[in-house]
Image (cartoon, rainbow, N blue to C red; front, side, top):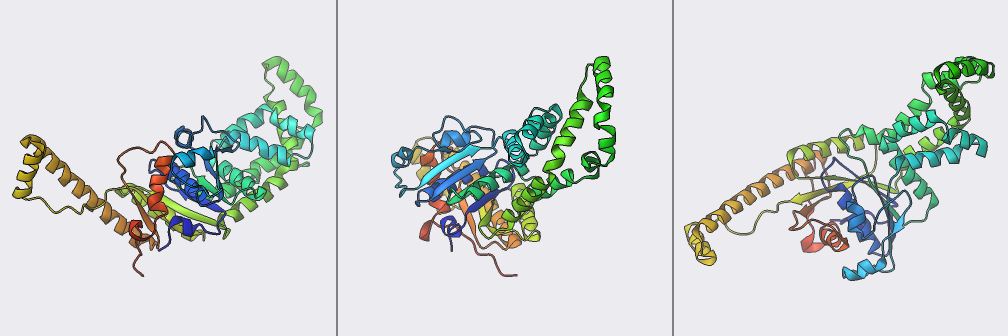
Length: 383
């Protein structure tokens, strides 16, 4: 059974998707670190506003440009990086949208008019609030530059899977919508209402109301009209990247009921969209204990060992709770495997301590990149 490393061999994009709070950011960082340790040049992109990723990689902060993780950290963690490089960035959706405008603007004057336009500033903030498309835009930009062997994307939480999978199409629906097209067509209502002959009306309104919104609106539509073709082509290429054989989707979840249900739902959407699904990572799994069920004899031995009867009973109660959680986790994982027909389900155990550095990430990789006895994969039954 393949490990994550074998699964990603020859791939250029790994998209980690799943609901919030299941360890998706940590998994993304661990995968990127693991591939870098195999000699690859890897970049991990996150939308998580928390500093966990930066902290775990020993970086003071992350921004919209990649920053390299100090190779010395690999040595300190006891890892030979084999000449690989690990880079990381945190997506700035607004900055990514601005960069799109700079790229598609026909000239410097148009670019500056749009970027300084108050309507654009409000609109870009509103669209950037849906970070899914901006995440894909940055991913595509780095993919097209071809500077990395592998890109790992930590996606926004997928409470609605379509928010991410349909982000390029939704952007084009906005750009090609009838309301926007009315204002951008040279012969349309927008140009009749906002044409050059209305400058006197704008001047009067500005003096009366002190507001320049209509003038800003006119300037935005006129400047943006020449960029629709570029945005349309870009969105098409972003959509194609999702389905590219170079891309691999990994679904990340926790072993509780609701995250399992959401993972199954997201997988179904991937299959319906014919997108390349690789496998599932289940985090914080309670493994079934290999210890035998306790009896009165074991209880007496425990009392003698700890020297406190009350403490011994609490230890036994805690052990019972753990076994119940382990049984629940395994039932949920079996359901997940059966419903998804997943050929690769990797279980990462509930670790004793939180992951806060590269050494912790490499500990996770003992399971993600495992082979032989450490591998925790499940082959689904054929339907």
